[in-house]
Image (cartoon, rainbow, N blue to C red; front, side):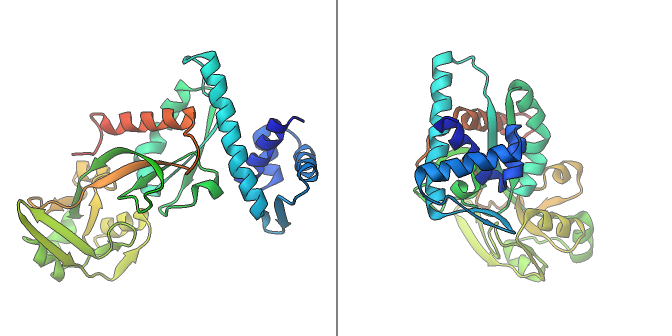
Length: 299
């Protein structure tokens, strides 16, 4: 087996976490994958993987090799595309990461359209509200919300939308509706620990107000925020993306609409030090077009 094929096998093993899963991706037998990795380790004279009952974990050398192998494969694919011309089909597997609720509502339902445009392409979707390590997870592009804390990231802003304070009509009927940000201190807030926490900052013209809200429910995932609000347990601050269907149907209602909150930004983030692949760039363009369409919740 040539070096590029061996690198591809190793990358699949690391990304999938097992020889059997990599074999299924490559459509070969598991013994062939195991043999390739053994030959690769023998040629390099270094242990690349730690094997245990819990699965496979790259060693420090293995992680370094994975990153460089992934980069080499991407650059080889780019060279093929450049040689064949712009009309060449995208091939292989694109591995993306996004927050659970945003992906469920705005990305996953449209993946079929993207795949129909690129019939030789497969997509692995990793759903996680946290900012995971892109290199360790083998991610080609991550869709991240909010300001980027790491200025060294390779990123491209895709879109942004309004943040609003909202609750169900039933909640407002029972507890009343706030007329000013200060009124929020008398309400139960559903606090999203990854989405602004308990400190909410409002602006109206030149006026600014910061409010610390209180609530008995604090969650670390958008799905928990949605479930709590829709169960009439409190109001929350969220992007319009998070509650797009319910805002449209009236199942939730915005309040304090004459005040502005910091807008929610969406970024495409690529692994540091690696050229973004044609597959990743095509997907980011697709998402940008989705969110710019007439059915987007940007407001």
